Image (cartoon, rainbow, N blue to C red; front, top):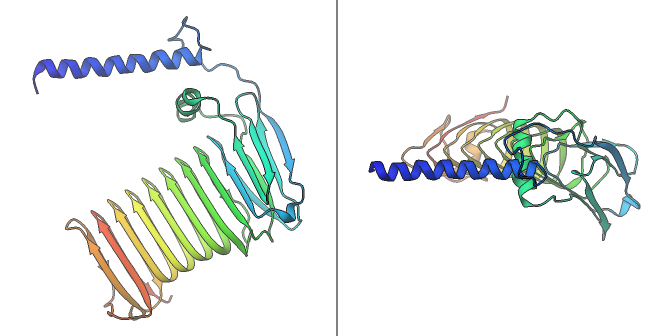
Length: 307
């Protein structure tokens, strides 16, 4: 690469950096061009606690929470009401709709630059001192769907045995954690990027775990079908009980202990030259249960035990 080309590239990088600084300063200074380089945390309107009680909670079959930069906590109870508790100010407000059996909570957007750049940078660089989470109080007898999507905010189901017959749980977040234990139901989907998934004592008919640049820790997981789609992540799973297990990995490390005899499984493996698959027992070709492994530049260890 010539010196001239290097100089052009370096100059372009500094120009882009200068533009970013200008835009951040401009928008954080309420679109004023003065004092663009004075980066100080301005006083914001305090968040106030609000609540919403869903009318006719027995008719609700789907609850959807879509937020930005805030944690979501699921709290079950033995009553029949569904209640949302959340925090609002002029920069953080929500639209809540309920129709056709669907309760949908969505944070109002503040515009592309402020929503996706300025506030995201603030979330990464500044520790928010105020409470700003959403808490959903739900009957433990709830049998519908629960969908939560958030960024920079943990998703957690606080109390054990919160739900036993829930139809579907679908959690997605970024650079945050998903934590739950002692739940059961039909479908469980967990998607996490850059954070941690921790689950224990989970029993669902169908479980899917999707992770990228994340740490996944599972203990005592039971299902008919279990899919692991793991990209640049680590997965530690113990006490797995499942008739059909599919593992697809890219640049990841997997350590899985299955509660079964190895002769109960037939195994199909597809791997790249850089991948390493370790199975602690001999595997038969034909069996009632199945394990499918597709590995690219990954290390996978699978053991079998009834302990």
